[in-house]
Amino acid sequence: MKPDYSVRIGNILMKNPVTVASGTFGYGSEYSRLIDVTRLGAITVKGIRKTPCAGNPTPRIAEVRGGMLNAIGLQGPGVQGFINEHMPFLRQTGVPVIVNVWGTSLEGYVETAAMFEGIEGIDGLELNVSCPNVKEGGASFGTDPKRMAAVISAVRKVTSLTLITKLAPNISDVKVFARAAADAGSDALSISNTLPAMAIDITTRKPVLANISGGLSGPALHPVALKLVWDAAPVVDIPIIGMGGIMTAADAIAFLCAGATAVAVGTANFIDPTTPIQVIDGIAEYMLKHNFPTIASIAIPR
Image (cartoon, rainbow, N blue to C red):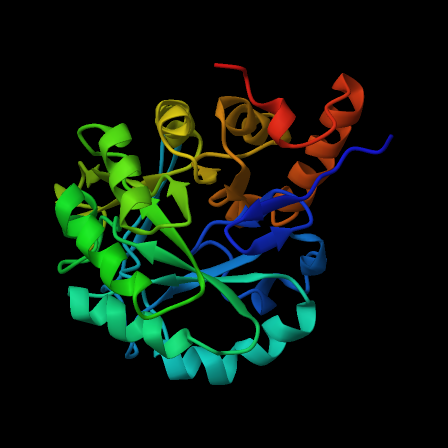
């Protein structure tokens, strides 16, 4: 019998468990010349707030040992710009669309989320309460479970879309945050965002990034995120999208073993845009080889 590769994240039915991490795949069309984006389980787009955002000054990306730093600052066209410029392409893919949403205040999150209600082709919202490289909002909500829960609860009241809360890696106890998000109305969790970090050029004796610090992603983040998924999975009954340092199918399968329902490929998209397709194929081969009938059956019994 052929394995069932599909998974459900809230009301989103994904034909396979692979999406892409917000901020690493543009708005989908940028990669459509490089891979068949219709093979993805879902497309998660760059962070959007109510109004356009220019992001941080440059330089805002740097390569470091084991990964990369980014301090893009959530540059984006705003809700209306995104709907007008990018949704026509995304609708024609037939792939579920998840919009990463952020704000600098609770009201900002609510207003942005409300604007996506009823927009054809949008299936879910990923609440970015954990971005480490914006000066307002972002991580300040994601490192306090009560503030995080307040944002989720307020957004839940204005949207019927699937809500996914993106957790930070630098939190005191992921179990506390996972339960708080679930109790506040989140339908799923993304674990995890980038890790606050920096680099210094010893020749100029200045930080490499104009923003001074940014978020660390790539292979170095994988064991950190894997541990967070392992710890969070047993304490909540909602799906987890595992992300952080997925460079190969084996990296993704490790998240599924740890209890994730789905996975997101991020930094690897910059190195080899075909990585998400390789991961999809690798998971399928693994399931056939080991006789796993469903994605959920890959999880290690606890």
